[in-house]
Amino acid sequence: MGHQVIVIPSLKPDARLAGLVTDIREEFVRSGADAPEVVIVNDGSDASYDHFFEDAAANGATVLTHEVNRGKGAALKTAVRYIREHYGTEYGMITADADGQHLPKDILRVALDMEAHPEALVMGSREFGEGTPWKSLFGNRCTSFFFRITTGRSCRDTQTGLRGIPASLMQLAAEVEGDRYEYEMNFLMDAALVAPFHTTTIETVYFDDNKGSHFHPVRDAVRVYGRFLRFLLASTGGFLVDILMFMLFLRLFTASGVAAEGAIGGSDGPTALLFGMSLKWESIVIILSTVLARICSGIVNFLLNKHYAFRSKQKAAGEAGRYLVLFIGLMAASALFTSAISSITHLPTPTKIVVDVVLFLASYRIQRAWVFRKT
Image 1 (cartoon, rainbow, N blue to C red):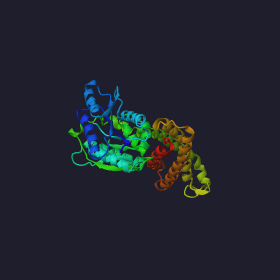
Image 2 (tube, helix red, strand yellow):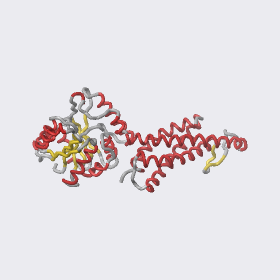
Image 3 (cartoon, rainbow, N blue to C red):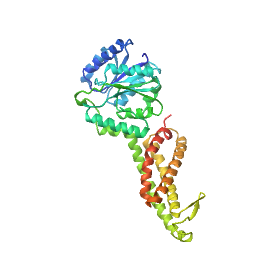
Image 4 (cartoon, rainbow, N blue to C red):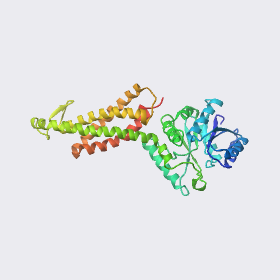
């Protein structure tokens, strides 16, 4: 276990911090391992807390300091850079909270699992039951569900701060978007694309109903879901363009087809060939309206997703090519499902709305994992 550093981001700690450093080092030594390196990041605590950090340093920790509060994500990035510069790129890290919620025996368990699963992201997963603060339980259930539907992978405890990050993911940890609480969710979602997960059960510890947490339930929740919310707003803009253009083309084609229906047999029978298929005029109108509306909205949506939702800095040409492939696939799915279902319901616009909502989550997952994937 010589290639792991324990990292503890800390804001306004108490006397438990120095004791935690001692307990961690003693727990490792009792197991027969060397005492681990412990790096604490003082994330802008004022001078009245200096003595707590000095005590932790006296107990064997290295203390890094932010002059102002920059957020938990920024603190973890500072630790990553320090580890890579002072220990080497073969080192990983174990993140733990400063408030004593992560027991030394569980930190050791994560370290042992990292040895057994060197390429995996190891997560200390809590068991939620009686005594769990409602906001912690509710928040974790929400983020776990969100993680499942947006990545297709299961994670029982997305909000755990006890994580074993292998050396292979340290570069990713240094570059993930976000400086505050959103960082941990963003890292988890990005890591899900490139690494296996390994879960180890840890003890659930809360002090005073978790009142020591610096997590703001509204402001920080918006940050945690920020990437998806930006995608939602960008998609809403493209969606409105799509629906408005669909309704416009539908009206234009329907009006122009009234005379054609009488000339070619009426709306109840085959009226024309489209790509070799004999279709009713109603179906032709819906398909053409869907395709043309999607072309207009696709251009708008690509620009919004690249520059706003995913904030991609990759070359536009490659992303545009991948987006075009996805665009054609979604357009075909939207057109075919809308046409097939509306032939039964005879409600083309409401049907299109329902179909596109179903395709929305699939689009997010594919764009995050493939179209705008960071190299």
